[in-house]
Image (cartoon, rainbow, N blue to C red):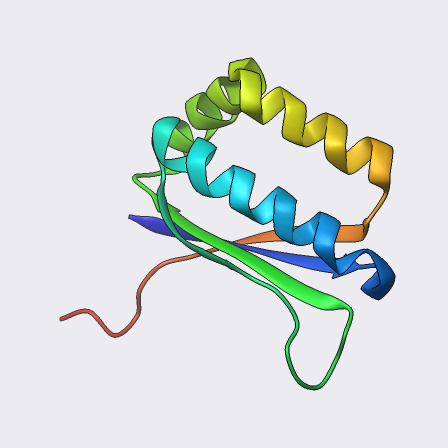
Length: 102
């Protein structure tokens, strides 16, 4: 199992749009085959950093999952929302394995 952590740099004046984006992924991600841990918006401290975190079996499963996201109607709408509203300034994905598991 791997965990994908997406770090977003967002426009703090478009937080509501990011929250809509996050809620939409909350429906799409599980439907497309990943275990969503959650989307996290700024609360205290930096107003521009947000995260999306989910787990998936492996990188091969990740590639198939990404294809399903692009084919999902709400997934396509969400990609369009992001492009139209431009609330994401930058995003980066990192993949981790659980080091504390026995």
